[in-house]
Length: 338
Image (tube, rainbow, N blue to C red; front, side):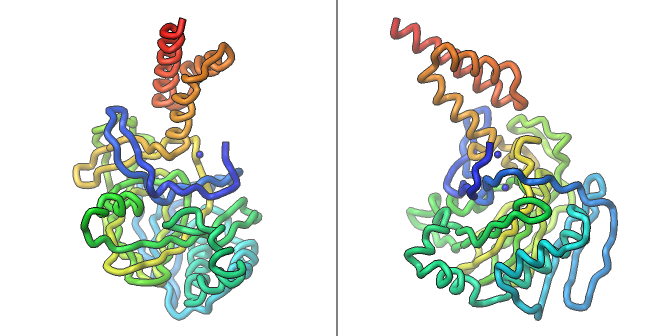
């Protein structure tokens, strides 16, 4: 979707590692944002459709309702107006009605064909607007501390892949062909171009042990194309998808609703075999492991004590294993010097 900073964090070009050492790419949609309030799991409730919006439902695990929306002929709104209207939402956060309200607002924002040009102009031109680009793959459209907690808007670019010597690099940058879940809740809408095709399914996070190669039951499989006006809501950890390259340049806009970073670990999946591939390096767990490895090179008594705490008390097994390895590495380096 993770001690937090106040900025979004790009992870499109980073990779994930299974405990067996296998490496692959990191989902492009991971972010950092602090102090998110967590949304409750939506109840088993059906909401009515309107003439201007088509909703598709599937009642998933524990009654969770997966929602896909399509909006047409809606009046567009600006970013400031989006945030004002978001604060005016009266439905309870986390409910299907709340998600539907968010989806409509996001579709109205995205319906403005001049949205990106306005963003560049409001930031003083392209050279100054570049500061809002967190990576070559996306830029931050706006952040807001709403009555529901911090939210963020970002614009994502999706390029087709034509092959050649840069194929692997491009595939990694845009996280194509990698099944993954997210450690944050978000909605995404097609803004420009045909949109990427995505295969989606649902998993039960409580049933996942986190072992590479582990079989994971994947339910409610379906395929969607993120065309303009279509909005898809992704819940934390339980919604898994894989993105395929679009035929032409496509742009999507994300509304980031909340982060559940330390409740579970983010994973990559092989949807064809229904197997878990491994943990994601550029996740909170992955970054913690990197810090532990770094600490092993400068381990004084205080640092060794901290590593021992991680090895004993850390929530995730990968972190405990990494801390034990860091302790062993630090001891071996100290012995080699003495």
